[in-house]
Each structure stands twice: as C-alpha cells, then as structure tokens.
Length: 237
Image 1 (cartoon, one colour):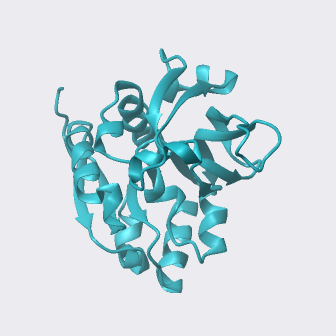
Image 2 (image 1 turned 135 degrees about the horizontal axis):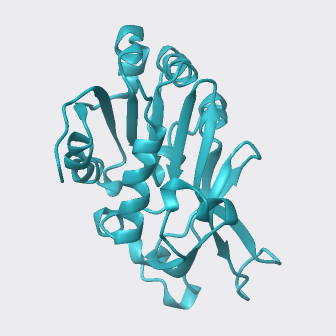
Image 3 (image 1 turned 180 degrees about the horizontal axis):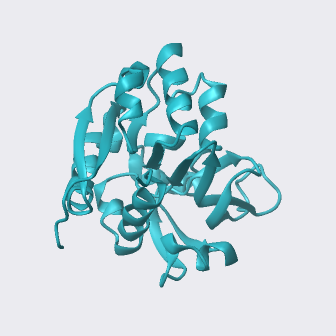
C-alpha cells in the first residue's frame, strides 16, 4: 500500500469487555488508517469525547468499546462532534452494544444489539461457540450501489449473528435473516441490518455488525467493508 502524507486525524477509542479483543481488533486496522493518510492516536476511555478541542481536530473516531459506561459530558461531546462533521465508525459490540444505559447514544448510532441466537439447546456446551451460527450477509440494492460494498457479493460467515433493534434513518447496505427454529419463541424470520450508514448533522456514522473477534475481522469481505467504511465516514477536508 502506498503511504500518503498525513492530512487527517483518526482517534481510536477502545475498551470495555475484553471478549471482543478491543486492543487486538483495533490494532489490526491501524496500518490501513496510516496508509490512507491518517495520523492515528489511541485512547482507552470514551471520556476523551468530553474534550471539545480534541474532538474538533478529529476527522474520524473508530470506537471499539463494548458495554461499559459513558459520562453525560462525554456523550454530549461525541454527539456534538459527529453533528459537526467528525466521522464515527465501528463494528460489532464495540459500537452497536456500547453504553446500554444511554438512549441518546442509541439514537446517534441507529442500532442496538438485542441478542445473538444460539444453537439448538441440545448442542450448546457452555462456551462462546454456542452462539456461532452459519449465516449469510446479504447485500441490499442500495448496498450494491454504494462505494463501501463495491465489487462484493453476498457472503457466508460462521460467527455471532446479531439481532439488532434499529430505525429508518439508517441506510442499510447489507442484512442478515434469523430463521425460525422449533425451539425459538418468534414465529417468522427476522431480518436485521448487518451493515449500515447514517447521516448525522454534518457527520457520517458507519456500523458493521460482524466482528466478534479478530478471526472474523480478517475475513476478506468483513475486513474490506470495515476498511472502506472507516474511510467513507471520515470527514474530508
């Protein structure tokens, strides 16, 4: 990859639940950001969002903070920064399952993890693999026309399949459908967004729900979508 002169700034904010490998996962994308012309800094707490000068100078936030908590000041700073043009991007629980107690954060992101259905009760063994299901990520018509998904097609994964609560402000680029099994309480297939973008004021938000661990993030389709999604979300100068 050709390295360009750094003209923009990217802030990686990581932490929360260790099961999503926030350090290893974000480190995976640092070379891509640097090679795309970003000066990259890393913070281990979302409280950096409360610094208005830092936020005004940030062109892209890459967040990987599962669950955890955020102060009112930091959340206000994040929302203000995105509305003013700072891009916000992330994957899986690092963005779609953050700060569960904050409805204002949920409104900013446009989707909230609800569950990841598990295997048949007779097949569960009590570890993370209980929630690894074979499923397909299907591009929408809008997705096929979008620069983030250019040249890609539907693809299969064996990992957590996120069931997401969402709203109509999202531009959904890909979906995944949860089937009905005899042991499920729901009565028809449920389709959830798997990749979406969202316009917020002058800013852009990008979310991809695949990415439970590094082995999912290095899938060529997932990695391509996230790398392109980060660049799409970033403020242009």
